[in-house]
Amino acid sequence: MIPAKSHIAVTVIFLCFAQLLCESAAVGQGSGYGPEVRSFLELMRHEEDELDFQIKHNEISHKEYLLAKNRIAVQRQSVLSLVKQRGEDAVPEIHVVTAGELDQLIEQNPDDVKRAKPGQVFDDKWKYVGKAVRGEVFFVFERITVR
Image (cartoon, rainbow, N blue to C red):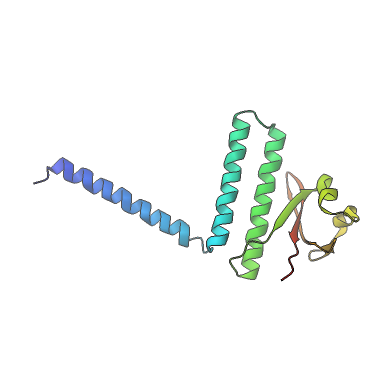
């Protein structure tokens, strides 16, 4: 016969395990995203964890930290918006750049981006998605893929 205290301990362990299983299922299914998007979101969480580690250990400046953190947030939101619009479990290749970085992505007339409308194509490989202001102005592009 199992003593009452042991029985309670086993019950508590079982309940904790059952709760973990339910939480895992909720994370996997409750978000409504498929495996590709969930994988992308997990990657973004890892990127943020790495940034937190770097700032905690003085490997990057506070300014660099905020820029990278905001860039990740804009990228995440842009991807999720496109996924929602398209209704498919496919993560588009999104690039998020500041005004000072435009010439690194757009070779011909990077200043034209500042007047661009969503959907406009640059250099036959980048579709302008839009801009986001989060700490500073970010320009969002999707790589055009040939199917």
